[in-house]
Image 1 (cartoon, rainbow, N blue to C red):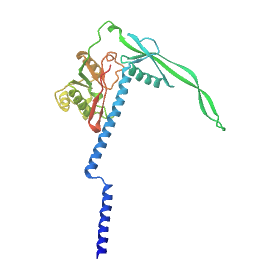
Image 2: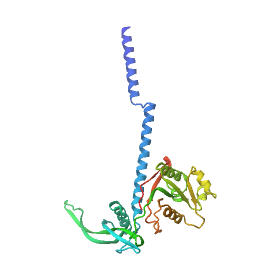
Image 3: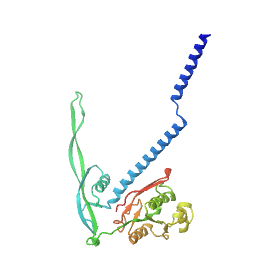
Image 4: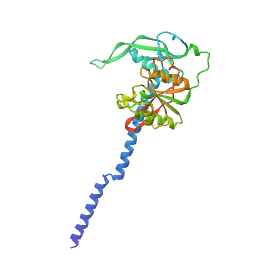
Length: 296
């Protein structure tokens, strides 16, 4: 009898031990939920960081409105800031790198002059021979250089700089409507950016192209429709058919001494060049929009 009692005790102990081992490898429902929440937070933070980095690169590219091989820019007084150099084969890639480098190094930089390149021979180890001896070859290396400059319109050289009001923002509504989705327009991004600005205690003014209703809802939309869709208590304009919205955006910014919110580079608008612009992004998955600091 005592033998079977001992056997039963050992069996029960073994079952308890095995069950403990099994449960040790299992996640409780609460632990699983917490883990998934932490993973979701990390994915969201990573997505925001990536979008912010892409937008920062856009800010730097957009800061430089002109690149020229000459020493001056017609209609502008040019103040030289410093030389920049990079190595690459294609001019387009060189211009891209030099734009970003100029904006990173010189806060006042808005143009590049004296763009040129030179070729030099560079010896490099191409491999090793049968006996392990290295052999060398020569290659041509193209080095590009340009002068970073601050270009000031001649008409403003002797005038005080314009004081822009960073608390008033003219939003390029048709541009922002495509943030997060280049193919389809949506007011989600516009709403998120309006919320962002209001949280900063800024006053947003939204300007849309004449065809915005058809892009959003395949029908004509009036100003009141858009005001209501954006939550009310906001100034909205729709430009007339045949009018370029960019002109009205620049005009309003000049009148109100306001900044412009857009990822458009406005390269074709001389009047837009000195106006500070805020670039931004919208993540549809997280309904999250953000604007970076203004820069002309």
